[in-house]
Every structure is written in C-alpha cells, then in structure tokens.
Image (cartoon, rainbow, N blue to C red):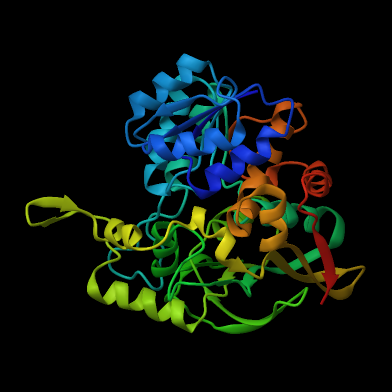
Length: 401
C-alpha cells in the first residue's frame, strides 16, 4: 500500500510510527507545510526512500492531486485540522484513490436558532457526494480515529453481538492526564478543540432526529475504569452523533467529554474575546486568524509526551436489552501515557487516535473491509478490527455497568 499522509503533526507522526512497523506498507509520503517537522519525523523512521518528505499546502487541492499522482498512491490520509477537509477530500476523488479522515467536514450553526436546530452538520458536504464516489467505485472512509472511529466500530459490535434492542449510545471520554510545567497545555490540537467544544452540540433521538443544545450542557459524572475515576462530562459537538444513527438502530446518541472546569473557563474566555474565530482579521496590516494566534501561543501537543502523566479513556456506553432483560455495557480503550511513550515515543492521546487509522489501512489493504461511496466505520465488520487492536498494542475491554 502507498499512502499520502497529509499532515505530520502529533497524530500524523503517531500514524507514521505505527504504520512503519507493518511490512505491507510500501510507501508513506510525509507531506506537510512545515518541512522541518516532516523531516524530524522522517529522521525517527530512518528510511528516506520508504518515507519521502514533500512540502504541501493542504488548502491547495491541485498540489494534493499532484503528489497523489506523483507517487501513485492508493489512499490519501487526512491528518490535518478539519478546516482543510474539503480540498483533501475532493483531491482524492479527482486523483482516483481512496480517502480517509479522522474528523469530517465542518458544520455551520443554524442561522437563527443554533441551540435547538442544526444548520449544516458535520460531514454533510461529504455525504452529499457519496453517490458520486460510489459511481466512480471509490471509497471515502470517514471518521476513523478513536472518537469518531473506534467507538463507531464498538457501536456496530454492540448491535451485532451484545444487544437485541438498543435504547441509547453515549460516547464518554475522560482522563486523569496532567501536563507538568505548563499552566495550560491541551494535549490535542487546540484548533480542533475550540471548533468542537464551542459549536452547538448535536443529539439524536428517535422521532426527533438531530437537534442541538448549548455548549457544555447536561453535565454528568461518569465513573471511568482503570483508576481514572469519576469525571464530569458535558455535551460536545462530535461526529459519532452524525454517524451512528445512519447505520445503527438506537433510540438516542450523545457525545460527552470530560473537559474540566479550568478548560471550560478558558474556552469560554476565548469565545468572549473573539479569539475562537477562524476568519482572518487585520493586525497592523497583517491578515491573521485569531484561532491561529491562540494555537501559536500554546505548546505543540506533539512534543508534550515526556511531560504528560496519567491515562486517557475513550469508550461507548450502551444501554438496551438482551433476551428481554435490561443491560448496560461500557466498551473502552485506556492508554497509559508512560507506556505509550516507552513503546512508540508518542504521547498517549495522539497515539490512541492514530492506531485506528492504521488498522483501517490494514483491513483495506488485505481486502477485509471493502466498499465504495462515503461510509462510516459502522458499515464494516467490527470483529477483525477489534482483533487487531490487541495486536497493535491497544486492547479493548467491555464491562457490565
């Protein structure tokens, strides 16, 4: 398999490290706007021929198409902030290769009633073009990171093997990670975090369809396993609420994230000051997006691994019935930062996202997952994916609640 990796940040590096250990990967093109960063990752991998470096502006569709054709890649892997999804997605279609991302095209709030009605939903741009992809015999596998991604595979597994009826599916994400040496240091892209946390969160219910609520709504304390403990989780906009109802029969879908009071306060302050905006403004004659300034002021999540301690948990809480009796399970994956750093040299949050994409490549390369059009992880057989999680060093667990 030959892959064009668009973006070699924290998650991109983790993807490259994990994939480099798989002999079926023939070539992985490390493409980034920051050539020094791409070369840094190439240096860790130690094989310039198998991992060539290329300059790439992810907003330039023609440049992406050119690299895809230059290396005759089988798949374009989108590993940059989702503001660039449209040109990368369209480039894959024009180049005639498969496409994969870990976050779908961006939403736009309802113009008059944003906290009750959805406007443009996450992934709408992509799903509207599914028939065209299918007609061309091409696959766009959308949302195959950890959340979305792994938990969507769990959703399919729960429907196929664990429940006769599903009343509710709720993604619950929490951690006890700390980053030492910084007063405020997000362990994932702050650009993406601002986008998903400050947009109106989506909820899906049978009979109502998709509707929205206010950011950080419906707080609840969820007891996370393996020593993480109780964490308050709140509603956040996320792709699972868009994906799961398309293929899973369930009464309700939510996504809640354990952000913490300090993090929520910082996000609210950024919103109040207008520093969450992605539209460029003029600053002393220079055009700059406020959100980019915030990102530039914070430490790079890719280089925080040696300062991070603790665990992060991603999982799916499912409620329903089996053989007529009520049942609740939590399907999850816990990543310990010190263990991940020792094994991969990447911090836990980005590695926990990255391994899912590589398993997806594995299944596509070996013809185990097949399809065309724009599809979510729920459309595929979950068993081979979950079996590979153990082999890749990210085992899952299922506990009765």
